[in-house]
Length: 299
Image 1: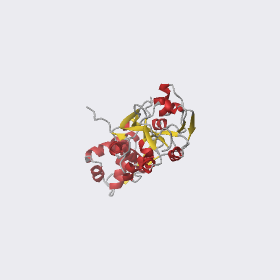
Image 2: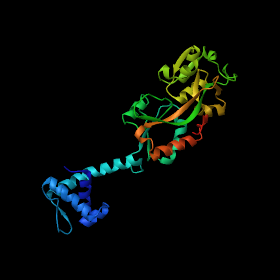
Image 3: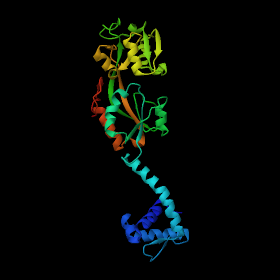
Image 4: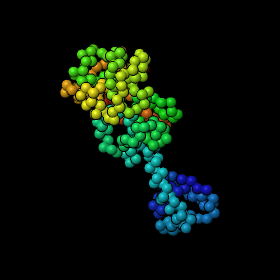
């Protein structure tokens, strides 16, 4: 019966008080606006404003539609702004990190935004990519590429995984770690399924090796302290342990053949070209992160 353009026209009429003023604010000719409103009045079967009144006055039907416009148009306008590029006036993008140690470097690239454009969400670590798919999240930083419809993975950088051990550990003097070196070790790991542990699926399992025991640790800081105390060894990104290594509390050891992983920004495919997302991705690529190597340029 009526469309959004009609609601916008009635709001402009009420705000401007004249047909000419409303047409100018809508970037329409006066005749085009008059024709649009006459067509709507024909559909409704009654007038929407009192002609020849100064200032222009709405009829009861006109006021009813104007009140509706005041209720729905602000919300629609805000969503349109967000869909055009998530500008500063829109709601912040909801960001989750599928990486227990990424907070070590993520806060610096996000600092310039002062919370206006990005909201760091911590409650979706169980299945953040599914939350992205359903719209609960807008961006997930992850090294896991899942087979999910409608999700685009933007490559950001490659990062090295290294074994951390106490300085007096028997492995500390090795140039690199072979799978058999870990057969008698307690492996400190995050509370995730064993199938997702990089050291198992990319290093030990292909070699037919299992560690003596897996010891689950809730967070990175506790894992680093336990490794420094000699209570086990852990595979971590270089950035996670660099402060402990600099103090002499831990040693970093590369795995034989090297183990590199790739960080992606996972987003819904229709949002992949939003300027704010692309600017953030570029900032992450340029961030000073230990153990990271940039991706080779395309071409």
